[in-house]
Image (cartoon, rainbow, N blue to C red; front, side, top):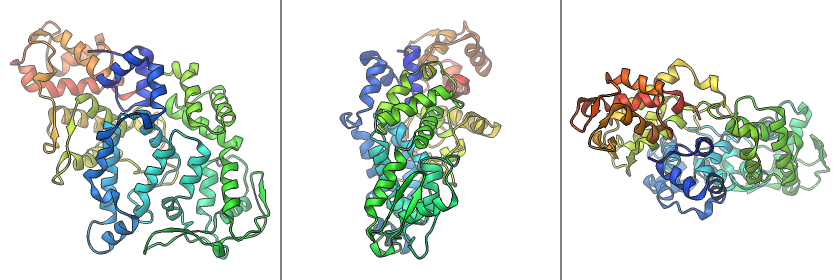
Length: 475
């Protein structure tokens, strides 16, 4: 099997959901830098299979009103619809050819977090995800405006019915604290109130059509000041002021610092240097909040190149990587127990489901949080179960045990090296071989054939133990 260069493996491990032979081939043909550049223009990458996954759950294409009416008339409940949304998300991450776009969609979804399942916003939750993905590699000022004013966000943080008479501060506060400048930026409580006042006027027809409208009579008028932004705000139609305000926040130096640090933590290491953060923040501002330009600066930075293995995979990253390197083929579900539906429960077993963090600040992104014994045991269970094809066992095709053999006969140590190249994107080591020998009761010199005990009965142990290693669980 092909193995990537160390630099290509590092890039793929940070900006894809699992190093497959196809990805390795792509980087061999194009070069790692050219592959990354191609990924930054996802609209030019055909992705028919991944694009078709949405049709596996037809309600994902319903209107918000249809989703609500289905929930209210005793049909598919809102939380059930959102479970399917999470399943679709997992499958997109497994099968999309637009791996960088999907990685960035997850990053921005965590920054601009809306939990799921959640009754307040579920009719618009799929649309919010589409918006995030649309802007994931564009400009942050466009992304911020689209996300903050999306009906799902307006409903989640109670801005949908915030009026000049009864200002709700939830979105105004989280916009500052979580979405832009950060809680240490120095804003006051009165500025939080002004932030919320600027946001008044946006309305959602909740519990009926769920349509968005701007209601000038709901908008607060009067002077507002937030983090250096000020406006007379005298017009009942406050949309111009609102757009100016969101653009101002997107371009604020404190926002640049916060986004730069978030990117560095996500793609470099848990404790990035001030120098790295400053460099990324400068590119972010100089480029007009251009996300592609900022990512280019990140992958060229010496700290990125030196950070091999410094990040722990989250449970969902581990699950998706495992399914990708095992070559598991999931088909359109017919029954509830089929793999495309069961994947939600596998993710729960692993310890994390997409959008499953209950607070508005999104999942934590540091190694210690994802290094508990219970999390590790969950991953071990998933590795072994999927290697054996134990469950799910319908709506899915696993590789046969014998298909892992590259030759009719070969030594066990050569077989382990072959598997390491396929599963881990690197050759075997003395430690990996020793672990494989212990797990399967084999000696390095033993001969492996299709009919031997190892291939017939112990392959799940062998495959599983190779994924129960730092080489797989770090990225």
